[in-house]
Length: 109
Length: 115
Image (tube, rainbow over all chains, first blue to last red):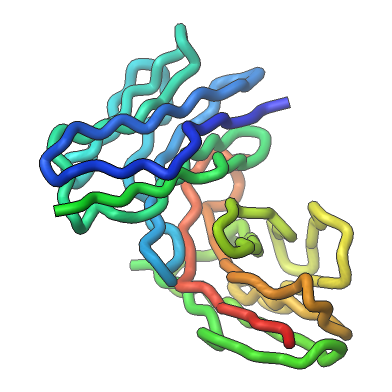
Protein backbone atom coordinates (compact mmCIF):
# COMPACT_ATOMS: atom_id res chain seq x y z
CA UNK A 1 0.00 0.00 0.00
CA UNK A 2 0.88 3.69 -0.07
CA UNK A 3 3.18 5.07 2.60
CA UNK A 4 5.40 7.98 3.59
CA UNK A 5 8.82 7.68 5.25
CA UNK A 6 10.22 10.74 6.91
CA UNK A 7 13.62 11.57 8.30
CA UNK A 8 13.92 10.88 12.01
CA UNK A 9 14.60 13.77 14.33
CA UNK A 10 15.12 15.73 16.32
CA UNK A 11 17.09 18.19 14.23
CA UNK A 12 18.95 21.09 15.84
CA UNK A 13 20.41 23.87 13.70
CA UNK A 14 21.94 27.23 14.26
CA UNK A 15 20.15 30.27 12.91
CA UNK A 16 20.86 30.90 9.19
CA UNK A 17 21.88 27.27 8.59
CA UNK A 18 20.60 25.28 5.63
CA UNK A 19 17.76 22.86 6.32
CA UNK A 20 16.90 19.58 4.62
CA UNK A 21 14.27 17.19 5.92
CA UNK A 22 14.04 14.03 3.84
CA UNK A 23 10.77 12.47 2.78
CA UNK A 24 10.25 9.49 0.49
CA UNK A 25 7.03 7.86 -0.53
CA UNK A 26 5.60 4.65 -1.92
CA UNK A 27 2.48 4.90 -4.05
CA UNK A 28 0.77 2.85 -6.73
CA UNK A 29 -0.68 5.85 -8.55
CA UNK A 30 0.08 9.56 -8.81
CA UNK A 31 -0.44 11.05 -5.37
CA UNK A 32 -0.37 14.64 -4.21
CA UNK A 33 2.41 15.49 -1.76
CA UNK A 34 2.35 17.94 1.12
CA UNK A 35 4.43 19.40 3.92
CA UNK A 36 2.71 20.52 7.10
CA UNK A 37 4.11 22.43 10.07
CA UNK A 38 2.93 22.20 13.67
CA UNK A 39 3.90 24.79 16.27
CA UNK A 40 3.67 23.81 19.95
CA UNK A 41 0.10 23.41 21.16
CA UNK A 42 -1.42 24.13 17.76
CA UNK A 43 -3.00 22.25 14.90
CA UNK A 44 -1.18 21.47 11.67
CA UNK A 45 -0.79 24.15 9.02
CA UNK A 46 -0.28 23.40 5.36
CA UNK A 47 3.17 24.66 4.43
CA UNK A 48 3.35 23.70 0.76
CA UNK A 49 2.12 21.17 -1.74
CA UNK A 50 2.82 19.63 -5.15
CA UNK A 51 0.30 17.72 -7.21
CA UNK A 52 2.35 16.22 -10.03
CA UNK A 53 5.88 15.16 -10.92
CA UNK A 54 8.49 17.96 -11.13
CA UNK A 55 6.16 20.46 -9.43
CA UNK A 56 7.92 22.63 -6.86
CA UNK A 57 5.94 23.81 -3.87
CA UNK A 58 7.20 26.87 -2.02
CA UNK A 59 6.12 29.05 0.88
CA UNK A 60 7.85 31.24 3.48
CA UNK A 61 11.29 30.37 2.08
CA UNK A 62 10.63 26.61 2.21
CA UNK A 63 10.73 24.54 -0.97
CA UNK A 64 10.11 20.94 -1.97
CA UNK A 65 10.16 19.32 -5.41
CA UNK A 66 8.05 16.30 -6.37
CA UNK A 67 10.62 13.80 -7.70
CA UNK A 68 8.95 10.80 -9.26
CA UNK A 69 12.22 9.14 -10.30
CA UNK A 70 13.47 9.06 -6.70
CA UNK A 71 9.98 9.02 -5.08
CA UNK A 72 11.02 11.90 -2.88
CA UNK A 73 9.70 15.24 -1.64
CA UNK A 74 12.49 16.68 0.50
CA UNK A 75 11.87 19.92 2.38
CA UNK A 76 14.57 22.61 2.13
CA UNK A 77 15.18 26.10 3.39
CA UNK A 78 18.29 28.12 2.72
CA UNK A 79 18.47 30.03 5.99
CA UNK A 80 16.42 28.96 8.99
CA UNK A 81 15.22 31.29 11.73
CA UNK A 82 14.42 30.67 15.38
CA UNK A 83 10.74 31.08 14.47
CA UNK A 84 10.98 27.99 12.21
CA UNK A 85 11.30 25.77 15.29
CA UNK A 86 8.39 23.36 14.99
CA UNK A 87 7.47 19.82 13.97
CA UNK A 88 7.29 19.16 10.23
CA UNK A 89 5.15 16.43 8.67
CA UNK A 90 5.37 15.06 5.16
CA UNK A 91 2.06 13.74 3.80
CA UNK A 92 0.71 11.90 0.77
CA UNK A 93 -2.80 12.15 -0.60
CA UNK A 94 -4.20 9.58 -2.98
CA UNK A 95 -6.45 6.60 -2.34
CA UNK A 96 -5.96 7.51 1.28
CA UNK A 97 -4.15 10.21 3.19
CA UNK A 98 -0.90 9.31 4.95
CA UNK A 99 1.28 11.34 7.27
CA UNK A 100 4.92 10.78 8.10
CA UNK A 101 5.93 10.48 11.73
CA UNK A 102 7.08 14.10 11.97
CA UNK A 103 10.49 15.72 12.37
CA UNK A 104 11.13 18.08 15.23
CA UNK A 105 13.27 21.09 14.32
CA UNK A 106 14.89 23.38 16.86
CA UNK A 107 16.75 26.46 15.66
CA UNK A 108 19.11 28.06 18.15
CA UNK A 109 20.28 31.68 17.98
CA UNK B 1 -13.02 31.81 3.25
CA UNK B 2 -13.21 28.53 5.08
CA UNK B 3 -12.69 28.14 8.81
CA UNK B 4 -12.75 25.18 11.14
CA UNK B 5 -13.66 25.31 14.81
CA UNK B 6 -13.04 22.81 17.57
CA UNK B 7 -14.16 22.90 21.16
CA UNK B 8 -13.34 22.71 23.89
CA UNK B 9 -9.70 23.69 23.62
CA UNK B 10 -8.73 21.75 26.72
CA UNK B 11 -10.54 19.13 28.74
CA UNK B 12 -9.71 17.20 31.89
CA UNK B 13 -11.94 14.19 32.50
CA UNK B 14 -11.94 11.29 34.99
CA UNK B 15 -11.58 7.71 33.82
CA UNK B 16 -14.96 6.21 32.98
CA UNK B 17 -16.64 9.52 32.16
CA UNK B 18 -18.23 10.27 28.78
CA UNK B 19 -16.70 12.45 26.09
CA UNK B 20 -18.04 14.70 23.38
CA UNK B 21 -15.79 16.79 21.16
CA UNK B 22 -17.28 18.94 18.45
CA UNK B 23 -15.93 20.22 15.17
CA UNK B 24 -17.64 22.53 12.70
CA UNK B 25 -16.54 23.86 9.35
CA UNK B 26 -17.68 27.10 7.74
CA UNK B 27 -17.47 28.32 4.18
CA UNK B 28 -17.63 25.04 2.27
CA UNK B 29 -20.17 22.35 1.45
CA UNK B 30 -19.96 18.56 1.52
CA UNK B 31 -16.41 18.41 2.86
CA UNK B 32 -14.58 15.27 3.85
CA UNK B 33 -14.10 15.37 7.63
CA UNK B 34 -11.46 13.67 9.76
CA UNK B 35 -10.63 13.01 13.41
CA UNK B 36 -7.00 12.40 14.37
CA UNK B 37 -5.31 11.74 17.68
CA UNK B 38 -1.79 12.75 18.49
CA UNK B 39 -0.16 11.25 21.57
CA UNK B 40 2.59 13.24 23.25
CA UNK B 41 5.70 13.38 21.08
CA UNK B 42 4.18 11.15 18.41
CA UNK B 43 2.69 11.37 14.97
CA UNK B 44 -0.90 11.49 13.85
CA UNK B 45 -3.28 8.58 14.12
CA UNK B 46 -6.37 8.71 11.92
CA UNK B 47 -9.40 7.71 13.98
CA UNK B 48 -12.40 8.36 11.73
CA UNK B 49 -13.26 10.00 8.47
CA UNK B 50 -16.53 10.91 6.79
CA UNK B 51 -17.38 11.67 3.18
CA UNK B 52 -20.99 12.64 3.89
CA UNK B 53 -23.77 12.98 6.46
CA UNK B 54 -24.17 9.75 8.40
CA UNK B 55 -21.20 8.11 6.63
CA UNK B 56 -18.42 7.23 9.07
CA UNK B 57 -15.36 5.09 8.45
CA UNK B 58 -13.40 3.84 11.43
CA UNK B 59 -9.68 3.28 11.06
CA UNK B 60 -8.77 2.00 14.51
CA UNK B 61 -10.90 -0.20 16.81
CA UNK B 62 -11.29 1.54 20.16
CA UNK B 63 -13.87 2.84 22.60
CA UNK B 64 -14.42 6.00 20.58
CA UNK B 65 -17.16 6.71 18.06
CA UNK B 66 -17.89 9.50 15.61
CA UNK B 67 -21.03 10.98 14.14
CA UNK B 68 -21.84 13.50 11.43
CA UNK B 69 -25.34 14.78 12.10
CA UNK B 70 -25.01 17.73 9.72
CA UNK B 71 -22.96 18.41 6.61
CA UNK B 72 -20.35 20.52 8.39
CA UNK B 73 -20.48 19.06 11.89
CA UNK B 74 -18.36 16.18 13.12
CA UNK B 75 -18.55 14.84 16.67
CA UNK B 76 -16.19 12.50 18.51
CA UNK B 77 -17.65 10.62 21.46
CA UNK B 78 -16.95 8.03 24.07
CA UNK B 79 -19.20 6.42 26.64
CA UNK B 80 -16.35 5.63 29.07
CA UNK B 81 -12.93 7.22 28.81
CA UNK B 82 -9.74 5.27 29.40
CA UNK B 83 -6.39 6.64 30.55
CA UNK B 84 -5.02 5.77 27.11
CA UNK B 85 -7.51 8.19 25.50
CA UNK B 86 -5.42 11.14 26.66
CA UNK B 87 -3.94 13.10 23.80
CA UNK B 88 -4.34 15.96 21.36
CA UNK B 89 -7.41 15.54 19.15
CA UNK B 90 -7.43 17.22 15.80
CA UNK B 91 -10.30 17.69 13.39
CA UNK B 92 -9.60 18.35 9.73
CA UNK B 93 -11.50 18.90 6.50
CA UNK B 94 -10.76 18.60 2.81
CA UNK B 95 -12.70 19.17 -0.37
CA UNK B 96 -14.97 16.26 -1.07
CA UNK B 97 -15.58 14.34 -4.25
CA UNK B 98 -12.03 13.52 -5.41
CA UNK B 99 -10.72 10.85 -3.13
CA UNK B 100 -7.96 12.00 -0.83
CA UNK B 101 -5.81 13.97 -3.28
CA UNK B 102 -6.68 17.34 -1.77
CA UNK B 103 -4.94 18.96 1.15
CA UNK B 104 -6.46 18.75 4.60
CA UNK B 105 -7.04 21.80 6.77
CA UNK B 106 -6.80 21.41 10.50
CA UNK B 107 -8.56 22.91 13.47
CA UNK B 108 -6.76 24.20 16.56
CA UNK B 109 -7.16 20.90 18.43
CA UNK B 110 -8.48 19.75 21.81
CA UNK B 111 -6.06 18.73 24.54
CA UNK B 112 -7.70 15.88 26.48
CA UNK B 113 -6.29 14.64 29.77
CA UNK B 114 -7.89 11.61 31.37
CA UNK B 115 -7.09 11.20 35.07
